[in-house]
Length: 420
Image (cartoon, rainbow, N blue to C red; front, side, top):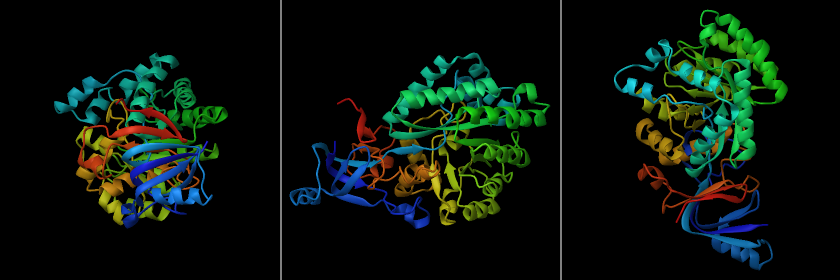
C-alpha cells in the first residue's frame, strides 16, 4: 500500500543521483526539501514538495492509499553503522576504571585483558545468552536511529566459537527489524593458546575457519586487526587474499594504534573499507584515494581510549569517502548511539554537521556496498528513514546528549515510535 509521508519541515534526502558515495565538498550537500512529502511502499516512489504531491494527485499522476503526518518534523535517512562488535558476553567495566587510573589499552592487553577478557566470556556463553545481550544493544541502536548495522565476529578465536558468533548474527538478522551485515573477524587477535605460534593460528584461519564460514554462508566480509601487537600487514594480506578466494570481501582495522602501513595494505587488496585510521600516513591517504576505499572513522573509540582523533579534514580534502560508525564493543567504545558519534565527529574531528550526516548515511552504506539501495531518500531506494523532533537538521549535533528520534521506519514500515 502506497503511503504519503507528509508535513515534513525538512526532508533531508542526501540525494546523490547516480553516485554511490559523496566526497570532498559534495559531503556538504544534503539535498534538503522544505515543506516536503514522500510516497513510499517498501521502497520510495516519489519525493518532493508537499504541494506538488497534491497537485500531481489531482492530475492523476501520483497515487497513495493513506497519509502519515509527521507533524512538521525533520526526516533523514536511517543511520548505517558500518562497524560494530555488538555480539559479545560479559563486561569490561573494570578495565575502563583501570584506564581512567592511567593504564593504557596496550598494557591491559599485555596483561591478558582487553579482547581476551571478552573471548573467555564468549567461549563460556551459549547462543541464547549471546542473542539476548546483543538484542538489547541492537534495539537501543535502532531507537537512536540505526537502521542498518554491520556486526563482526572476533571474540571466539576458535573455529567453533567464531561459527557460534556468526550464527548468532544470522539469528539476529532473522529476528530483528534491522538490516544486518555479517563480517568474519577471526583475525581480531591471537588467542593465548597460539600466542607463540602465530603462523599456526593464521593457517587455522585460512585452512579451517574461512572454509567453514564460507560453507555456511555466514559472512560477507573478512576483517583483520592490522596494528602493533596484532596482525602485521604481511600476515593480514595472507588472510585477506585467502578470504577473497572464498568470496569474502576484505576490510581492515587500520593504523589505529600506530602507522604500520595498514591503509596501504587496504588499498593493495582492494578493501571495501579501512577503519579507525588514527595514525594513517600521507602515503596511506594517497593509497586510499587511488583505490576508492571508504575511510570509516570511529571517534567514539578515540574518545574512550583518549587517543588522537582520525584526521577527518585531511581525508575529506584528499577526496576520500569518509563514513562514521560507532565501533560499539565492550572494551574500547561501549556506545551504540550514532547521534553521539555525529556529535563527536563535529566537535573533535572538525567535521561539519552536513558532512557528518552524509558520513553516517550514504557513505556508511557505501562502506557496506549498499549505497545503491540505502543511505539516501531517493526514488527506488528502500524507505529507511527517521522522523526527528527537530526544526533544523543541524540541531541534531548542536543539541547533544539526548535522543532526537521520534520514529524509525525500515522498508516503509514504522518499526519503533518514541513514547509520547
